[in-house]
Length: 254
Length: 69
Image (cartoon, rainbow over all chains, first blue to last red; front, top):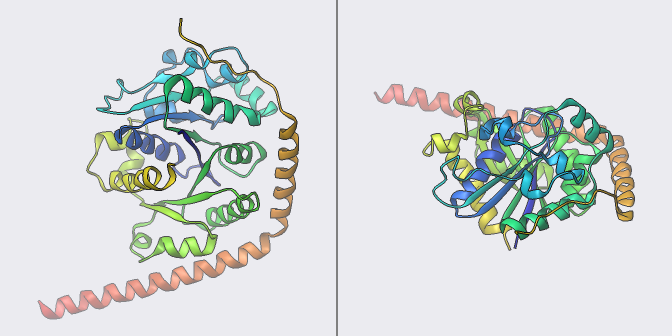
């Protein structure tokens, strides 16, 4: 059975696309079939991390949304390109054209898109996971994406603005009875040493915290040069991503 | 020829109701902000205390190591 989830954050620059790309690769390394969809339509960035050229993106998610292209024209199979030894990784990229971005921002996407794209990806590619990399912030379209997927993973940095925004988001999702989880990202090294930091945050937000990723400058520096965990599989960052993937595979699936 | 999958644009009736509910929730959430801020401030103070204790512990350990060496 396919599981869909959004990776969301209250603020931009929280590491959503980096986490999405690395987590998707890790899930593929568990021999899973994973599709990642770039829903950060105003500033798409997943293709940069995956090193997908514009020439590979003959049709985009925007074309699919307006019925101008079939799913098969939009999906890019990255398994060979990234030299994954097992599993499958698919990518659906958003258009970079300003007029396309403006059109979608004005019109928004429809609720049924989320259900249909997941069903079609399961039918055509047999995917186990569909990950939506959303636009940051608390707005109607992003909440629609969160509410239309099975589960929500909220990425949070340990600063006041982000904690406050995540608290409010968690409150809203609870009112909708939506299951959500938090991942602490870019945690300063001194704070990362605090025993049970995850428990403390979980208590504040009333949401389970399923991962804590300290700030590693080398991850930030690497950003546009491919998927970090493929280049540095033994780096502590890769282990943190593996813990989150373990949770998804063992606790969220089925 | 393999089956091709298209999305048919359009909105369902249930979507309007869901969007209205989201708007209502967003408006309600904004009115609660002062209470949220109070809770987050308390959390930050608690975290600060923990970090201070951790610094203190590290200092003591360092001094102990110096004494032992």
